[in-house]
Every structure is written in structure tokens, then in C-alpha cells.
Image 1 (cartoon, rainbow, N blue to C red):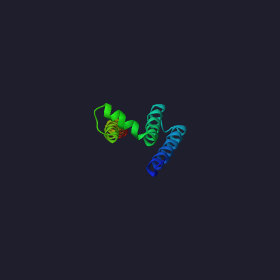
Image 2 (image 1 turned 90 degrees about the vertical axis):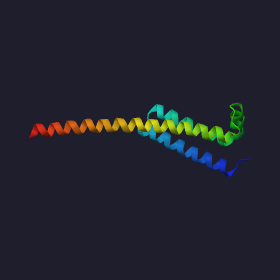
Image 3 (image 1 turned 45 degrees about the vertical axis):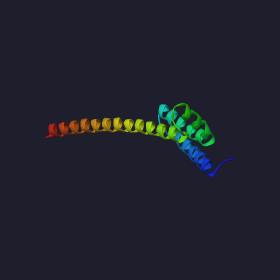
Length: 111
């Protein structure tokens, strides 16, 4: 029997998956990012339908509950995403600095 939480999780994951597909078609998402996010949302659907599977895996890994395994995986994924954002922000800052320098030199040459 499907619970309301499972239904909400599946509907949300399917909605998010549809957004991922649209972003790929629009060209706003690379294939690598598409694969990553598709994996995440399909993983959520699997977790929603088979929560006991993760309890079994968690116990084999030395954790007491499946929720602990999912929480640990979520933290790892979040740290990875934060790292990716950090790298992109640093890259953007370097590009802005380079552009500002070039514009400044161009203005100086015009004067």
C-alpha cells in the first residue's frame, strides 16, 4: 500500500525530473548535469518505494537505520554540490576581475 509520503515523494521527484528534462532541451543543462540530476530523482523514487532496502544496506554498513544511511548520503551529496558552487563562484569572480581590468585598460588608452 502506498502511503501519502511515498505519493508526495514520487510526485515531487517526477515533477523535478520533468524540469531537468526541460532544462536539457533548453540548453541550460549539460549532459553530465542531466545524468546527475536524473540519478538523484530516480534514486528518490526508489527510496520512496523500497525504504526497507536501505535499512538492510545500512545495517550491513554498520548503521542502525536506513534513515541514517540516507542522511549520510544526503550530506555527502550536499558537500559535493557546495564544492561545485564554490568552484563556479571562484571562476566567475576571476572572470569578472579579468573583465574589469581589460575595461579599465581600454578606458585608460582612450583618455
